[in-house]
Length: 105
Image (cartoon, rainbow, N blue to C red; front, side):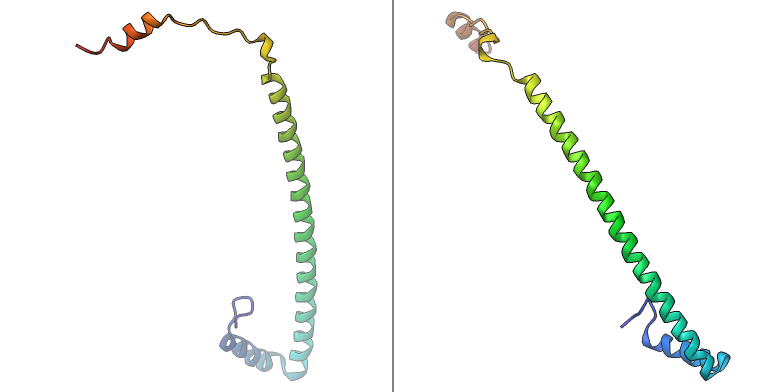
């Protein structure tokens, strides 16, 4: 199991090195302080991440509302009552048959 990318062998090496350099009493104090700082940093990171997520959700909801508003406006502009649409002129059946047979020899 790796903790912050540090495996068990590396962790043991760091612990032995800390005991040698700092001494047994000071190593315990430093470990406590490191643990406290890690917890504080972890809580801060979690709080910041939650705030960022809330902000993104708010922005996304605003964008979705704007898109929906534009969609509705576009539908209203495109929707034309059927009475105002004129029927296109129809071609006579003779001209339709002639154009269909043009490619045949």
